[in-house]
Every structure is written in structure tokens, then in C-alpha cells.
Length: 199
Image (cartoon, rainbow, N blue to C red; front, side, top):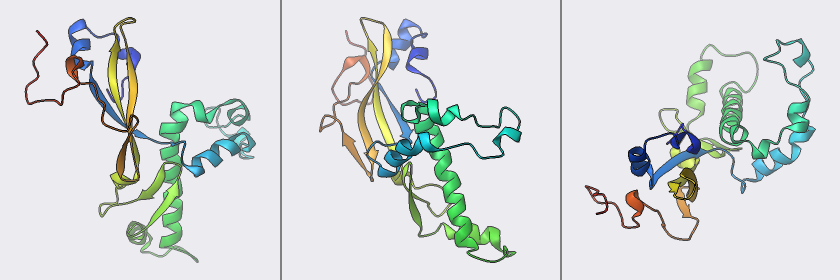
């Protein structure tokens, strides 16, 4: 269900709903309320101001004062789970540029230096500890992931995402203290190779 909302799942046929009920969704989670950097960012959000040149930019590029005064960044899934990754990507690029060319004019080898600078290096960002593998990709274990059950509410005939666990710091933390997933056909038994509909 990544990329589709629980309400959009409600538009599916009855057979499709039955098949999806009990599935799981694993999604990258940007902000984590336990992260002190995120807490500070949220606390300081309303004190931010647009850059002085913002009013000279095209309307769709400029930033209104109300973005910081009226927008609740902590309640926004776009702010929490998309913008935080962008923020950390820009921060990583800035840090790596400083590591690649700490002073003076850019060397002709800046690109190679920039790529090599990510080795054996990490920083704490809004999405947690950020580090990179040998290919330059973010190490999966350095992110925070949420695992939710996709469950159909029989009374409302609507799907809901029920958070079951969070992967943080390299391990899964189950909300109930143990794995308590609901599987297809509302079974709590571990899946087998071939699921059979209930008789």
C-alpha cells in the first residue's frame, strides 16, 4: 500500500479488500518524536522567516510568512515524512562539500573528493543518524521505518493503518512488546507458503 492512502483502498472491490485486509505496509518514517533534533526543529519552526529575496521570486517559488506562523510542521505528513528527508539530503550535501574542499577554491577533483567524503562518515539529522554505504546510498539501518497492519474496519468498511512496530537504531521495536500482526483472512497465525481462504 505504499503510495496509496487508506481511503483510496476503500474504492477497491470486495474481493480486493479481502485480499488486502491483514497485509502490512513498511514505510520510511522521516521525523521521529524521540529525535531531539526534530523536537528542536518543531519548537523553532514558528521563529523562522522567509529569506529576504523571497518576494522577488516567482510566486510558486517564494515563501510566505504564514508558512512558519500558521503551518503545523509536526502535524504534516509531508513535513514529517518527505521534507525531513529533503532537509537531511541538503545538509549531507553541504557537509560533504565542506569535507571535500574545506577551504580555498574548489579543486579540479572536487567531484571525486565529494563522493569519497561520505566514506566512514555520518551525521545526526532530522531523520536520525545518516550514513552511507559503499555505493553512496543511505544505509537502510540508519533510517527509521514504520510497520503498520492494513486492516479493514468491518463496521465502517474503511481501511486503517495500525502502527505495529518501528525500526530505529538498527532494530524493530514492537508497540505491544511482541509481534502482534494480523495476517490475511484475519489470521494471527504466521503465514504459510499457500494461504487458503477460511471455510
